[in-house]
Length: 308
Image (cartoon, one colour):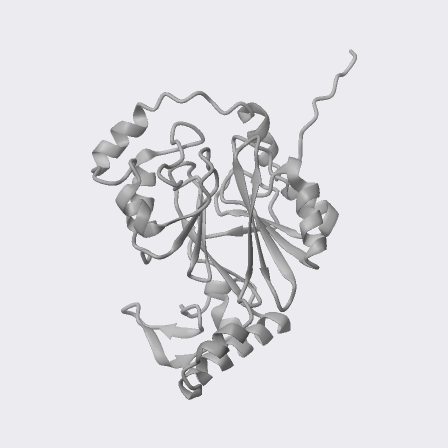
C-alpha cells in the first residue's frame, strides 16, 4: 500500500532502520497512516516534516524556551465508578480536534460537557476491544457529534466506520496514536501508544495486574507474549494508563510493571498460563448485556414482544 515509514516520515530500510536523509509524505505513507491523501492530512505532515528537517538548524533550547513551549497534546483520564473503567480524552491543542478511547454509555453527558468546556470537536471514538463489563458510548457519541467509530481489526462487530490494525497510526494534528496488537484478553485486543510517551493498555496490562483470559476467545499464552514481547520492550519511562483499576491507582510505567507486576515479574510463560487458568473469577455482571451491545458499537438491542 505504501512505503514503511517512521513516525516522522523517514523511510525505513530492509533492515528496519530509519533513514537520516530520505523522507516522504502523502500517498506513499498510506501503509502506516491510512488517511494520507487528503489535503488536511498532507498539510499536517508537511508542517511536521518541516519541523523535523529544521531540527539541526535550531539552537539548543534554554529554560525560557521550555516554559513558553505549547503542549503537544491535551490528555485527560476520566473514570466510571460503576465499572471502574478509564476513558481517555486526547486532543490536539491547535486544531481542537479530539479522540475518546473506551467511552462509557452512562458517561456520554459528562464527556460531551468536557468537550464543550474545552472547545473541542470529537473526531473519533476508539475501542481497545469488545468490552464485557460495560456498554460503550461510541454509538451514542457518533449520533450526537458525527464522530467516527474505530474498532480493532478482526473484532466481532460490523458497526465500525474504520478498523485499525497492528502498526496503524491514527494522526490528529500533533497527536499520533499507534495501534499495538495485544491479543489475549480477547482475540482482537489493541493497546495504543500516544506520541511515544503514553501507553493506553486497555485490559491487556493493568497496574500490578492484567485482564482475564477465560472468555471471548481469550488466551493466556497470547497475552503473555503480547505483554512481554511488545509492551515490555518499550522504554521503561513509558507511562502506562490501564483500561480499569479497582484500587484507585491511575498511572504506572513500563519499568515499574516489569519489576513489580505480580502476574509477570519472575514468572515463566508456563507459570503465567497456569496462574491465569486458576483465577476462578465470576463473570462480569453486565456481560450478557454488554457484549451484544458492544458488537453494535454500544447500540442497545431491545427485544420486541410479538402477539401471535
